[in-house]
Amino acid sequence: MKLKKLSSLICVALAAGSLAGCNFYDEPHIPDDGSETPPVELPPVGEIISVETGDELKEAIEAAKAGDVIGLVVGGDFASMGTIVLEKPLTITSVSAEGEVVSGSDPVAKITGASCFYIPSSAEETLRGGNAVTLANLAFEKMVVDACSSDGNDSQNAIINVGKVGKDKTPVKLSNITIDGTGISEPTGESDAWIYSRGLVNVSDSTFINKSEDAKSIMYLNCDSSASRGGSNSDPYGSKFDNNTFGMATANTSAMTKVATIGRPSEVGNSNKNCLTTFTDNTFVNFAELMSETDDASTALYDVFGDTTESGNILENDGETPPPVGNDPLTTVEEVNAAIEAATVGATVTLAATGVFDSGVITLDKQITLTGEDGATISGSTCIDVVKGAEGATISDLNFTNDAIVMCGSTDDKKEAVINIQKVGQDNMPVILTNLSFDASNITSQEQIDNKGNWIRSYGYFELTSSTFTHLSSDLQNDAIRLTCNSSAGKLGTVIENNAFTMEGSHSKETSAVKIGDSNGGQIKADQDQCNTSVISNTFTNFAHEITSDLSDSSAGRDAAIFALSEDESNNVFSPVNAFN
Picture (cartoon, rainbow, N blue to C red):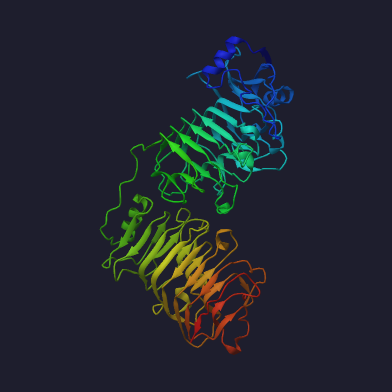
């Protein structure tokens, strides 16, 4: 490590590198009692400490005083450093081999691998009154995004994790930061992000590029704490984002990825949970629209509370946006899959009544509508595999007359089904199934059904309405609809409403119209009580049992309309009443 006193020359260099000159204490501490603000004696500007490795960086942070500048030497080894904790008002930037702070387009230090910066909530009293943490002139490449925390508190999958700091309108400052998503390894949880903040953060003159459409937000702003509003709910000051570039690697066709999720969706309607952010003069690449109050339409900014201010922002694309899907109905499974691949969010893909769809898998991985002309029919062994990215998609107006139920899909979550809904679902974004017809008359033996497969098999979140199931056989083991609710998506509140189910046969096999949860020995397991499924206002005809969790006794027939734990035993809902004929 090298120490160097911060001279006037270095002050100029810092200013050129997008730092606010040498004044790292640009807002005085504001008394809580409303009294007049006393004169502030700013501490002297500290040392520049040059470091060449991750271990040296940690040692320098430990030894540093408030106001010190720690310079990562360009070309140094800053790979897989683990969690770097910042609890003092320090500036982390790049310096040359001579210890000069970089400026303009000069090369910067590169941070790679399993590394992250963590500003803990425990530093809330230290990082106030203008005493800010600043990260500037740094590049992050080929990162491994994982849990970022030092003590288990505020743990979050992120590259930069900002805790509940920001009192006295003192933000964590990020300036001239580059994060490149090429080759990055990152999880895909709802709140996983490159930058996660529970506090106040200002981001300027930075570039975030090549974000994958398989992941979620570049930034996630959790505004539950008043720290995110500058430490005050009565005089709020939100995070600011100025003159940055945010870009997807390709067009955001899945609509999963956001530049920023601004506020937590689960807090909508609650007071003092909003963010009041400002986006000014930013460029957004490969997004269909700038801002929306709903999680849809490939929007760059998911403005949960609708209180974000924007001006001077630009939407761009790189010329690789898929062409719009035409309106001509499609006649083969291959054409359907090609149309889905080319579709943008909100498009409609239509199956022709004259089409032949009797083999193969239709993969639905986008928020589009898959529908059919009057008479469009899926037959043979064709199935629809609903995978990640299809949250909020619609399947409608199709007939199913399959003579085989086979394995559907190519991922680890493939299952034997005609419609296989994987672990797909977000709050208020079920897969919509409506006006569908399932005719089971072509399936007359167990050999036509792989592994007791189902017409609809779901591990996710869906709503089924206005559909019919006819010629179901009580002499075959294949529940018409089977729900497995061992994932979070499977517990979001599936609804099966206003449908009709008709059973035939001698009632000799364990089967049902709707099975909710896993069973053993003909009984639904007691731990399947959190499926949160509503089966309401449906009509069931010719079933041996109405609602039961036990089909182990064959003396009264082994088929049920609803095979599930009761309302008293679970959080399932079976009213308004279903009709049993």
